[in-house]
Length: 580
Ligand code: DGT
Ligand code: CA
Ligand code: CA
Ligand code: ZN
Image 1: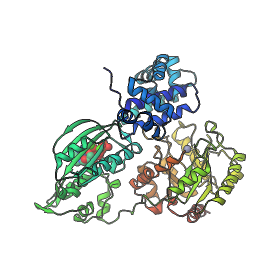
Image 2 (image 1 turned 90 degrees about the vertical axis):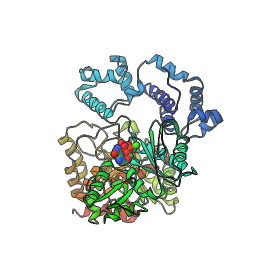
Image 3 (image 1 turned 90 degrees about the horizontal axis):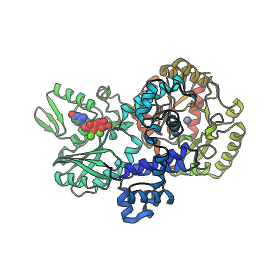
Image 4 (image 1 turned 45 degrees about the vertical axis):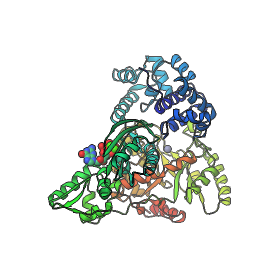
């Protein structure tokens, strides 16, 4: 049976086109296809409908879609396929999209596995890895094959969960549309998305309404909905254009706070609160809070917690751990706020693998309300990114001086994402590092070292007297790459001893994870939250990093780049001095 053309199928075809082109070393185009695929995947309207109303013009207007790819999309909505894509499929008859999405496998490796071992599907790859056939391939080996199997297992575990970065903007459109429905008095995102979990299983919404059937029905007609799974008077369940499920729960306006609280979860948090209530002879559910059978009026979630003698627990902390205890003892931290970050410390430019100039990145950051950024282009051992050597880094420094002279109320800091080499030494000479405002380091190569060797390597780099920040400390990428093996408590001790701040990377790495943030905060290590932007629009990722810092109980004082630039630099230097 042929699946109907929908956004997901178009996005898959575009993404696979990009991978085929990439495998054949075509320049630029792969990235354009990948970007377009992502745009269509997270689009809040049906692409077919869009083509019907205004054809190529509307598609062309979407971010990341040019005229060439717009024409391909129109072709697919009209004929059910993209000719060029079909030709690739004929020439390379294997599941490029699936195989290249296995962590540790890119399009070139997928092509190689098909050519050498006739691997056509993800299943084939798994079988070949398990039977040692991949390890025996030249240039592969045991380690890489084992890594691939780990990646496959991780992928299975996470199947169907969407990344926060994709789910959040989509759900914003939905909730705005929902608020505009006349029968809806109030609406909010709920579930794991409201708690800003790094991945979500579906999109949950709560709405207050006096006309629940009408409201539920209107939900099923919103622009991003492709099909209706279930519709009842108090609820509706749909599937969206981005492939995710959507749940709407309706409550009466007087039950708004209790309903919002209930459907925000987590389930574990709710169970703990309900147990507390039962011990007192109270009851709490989506229908309200009852003391010995009598309704306690609660207008806001704050009132819900206050009834228990607790401070309000922000959704990010509702994880079913020790947050209720802390709230009762008035010991919750004042979490770092979404507007608290003043500077972004990981920004790449077109000097390496970024897509915009120094000035474009600076102006984009300023437009977003930041007052400083650090330019952290890669260093030369990462040759795929055209990393900078000492000479080019010095040239960039001169360019930054000139730029700073022309900017008002904004400062561009000279920095680097200096590669940590296999032995823990740094990829740039000391005099090059000494000329920078701050030095940031990260591991990108030789990721499969054993735990002791990796920990030693990272700590050796942290011990370098000029190093200020360790970027994406564990190397993981959400849904794609497992962290490398690291003795994290030792890294924390080193961070404190050598005065090195740890990054909470806001891209799809989300590294540190919220659990690691919590450990870091407990240990008294300092953090920075960065977007890891490679283009102006990536700066929009910062809130996802802040969310993970919040989930790890971080206060503004734990995050150094909440300070204005002068105080920030002083605090960084202060970490080092404490040691001397
Ligand atoms: P997810 O969808 O796996 O990312 O995680 P959640 O937390 O969004 O879970 P979901 O969508 O099953 O449920 C949404 C919220 O509904 C959940 O956070 C708490 C609330 N809830 C209340 N009672 C229950 C219950 O008995 N079971 C579940 N699963 N959720 C409940
Ligand atoms: Ca959910
Ligand atoms: Ca749900
Ligand atoms: Zn990096």
